[in-house]
Image (tube, rainbow, N blue to C red; front, top):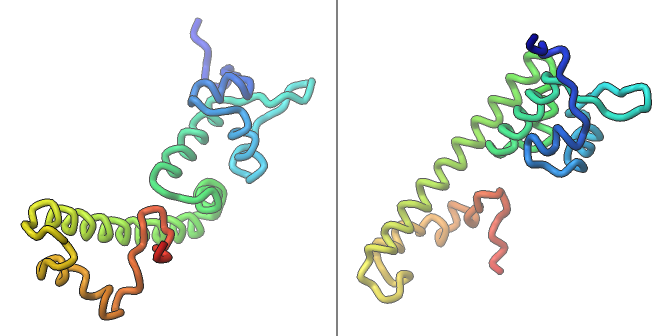
Length: 150
């Protein structure tokens, strides 16, 4: 007879191995309020299939660039709180996509440009003129950190 989803029980090590994580990651997520595993009679963490789906949601959300705080709102907040977090994340994804498109265009131009020094190319200069004239303050890297000139 097949086990039901209610019968599935994993230890912290088994669940971590299932997702190729270190056990301390699951414990950290628990400390941050993202996971709430049951405890057995000895106080050990016991994870269910629902917990596995929550871990999968956390991993997918992290891969999309969400912070743990955003993910906590996503999995624990009111419906309106979740929607606002998701709207904000979509805006961030749109911003990052725009930056990626700009970077892709600039890289393609640099690759195809015949100028020995790309910074002297009029086409390249036009591409970054907003940075030179101050209408864009630096370029944001994909991880969200600004270039500090170093």
